[in-house]
Length: 253
Ligand SMILES: Nc1ncnc2c1ncn2[C@@H]1O[C@H](COP(=O)(O)OP(=O)(O)OP(=O)(O)O)[C@@H](O)[C@H]1O
Image (spheres, rainbow, N blue to C red):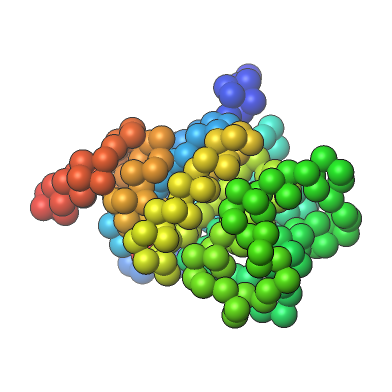
């Protein structure tokens, strides 16, 4: 019998994950036999050239798309066989998302956006959750902006609201897709530092797709994809080490 992911101390696990698009001569192998585990409190960056399969891997692990081969577990639930409605509930309760484009609801103020995951789940935060949300709002410096709508905020503030929203329900796992892509480098650094520190404190696993060596340097490990496969785990690295590796990889391609 296979070990369950929690036997192995993992929040999410993918085994032999593959994704093919199209048929015959038009077939594209977007992901090929990828196996990874994500641990509580661990920050993983996913890097690699354009088209190497980063978004595909993230979408499959978040249950936003179905694999051609292999399995994905969230906790001890094998999500590969779940119905769409069961997946939607699981995603809402166990996964937070942070996107490059923030994806805030323009008609809601900061507080409404942060509380949206509870609204969608048809419930109010418990007292304990309210304490955590208050802490998040203070840590992320959003208290003076609670009544403001997204268009009244800077890019960095909007991304901090998106992070508060992603962490509000204390999901096991946070997926971030180029979360600093629309921020200047200083704001990006601040936002990432807050994301990493906040999730480390509450034990969330973060998986972040990025092209940016500075963003990736906040991670505990850096998985590098090429042609749909994981070719390297760089571990903790400086921006200079990451840039040097990526350049070396491009030169060898
Ligand atoms: N819906 C689709 N139909 C056909 N091919 C697809 C589809 N989605 C992705 N692909 C192909 O799968 C491969 C991996 O794509 P993916 O978006 O995962 O790469 P990526 O590493 O995230 O790229 P980028 O850094 O440019 O966002 C690419 O060759 C892409 O063209």
